[in-house]
Length: 80
Image 1 (cartoon, rainbow, N blue to C red):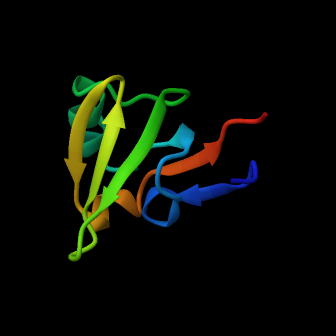
Image 2 (cartoon, rainbow, N blue to C red; image 1 turned 45 degrees about the vertical axis):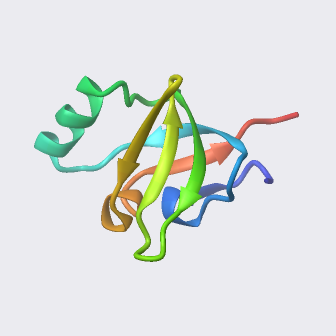
Image 3 (cartoon, rainbow, N blue to C red; image 1 turned 180 degrees about the vertical axis):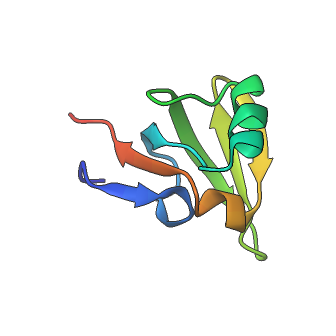
């Protein structure tokens, strides 16, 4: 993946990505932070479900998020 910024719902499978933004809703952002989400953190999309949800590897844990939530998180590829 090039180093351009995309929404997580558009990110390719299997590539290491850096989180560059999180949801604007403070309640959702806080809940995500308690699960280990933070700007600058690494995430990898492991699977895209038929309904659009994403299964992610976040800090060594598998996390499932909805397609709607994946649209609110922006990521970029790791250079190199």
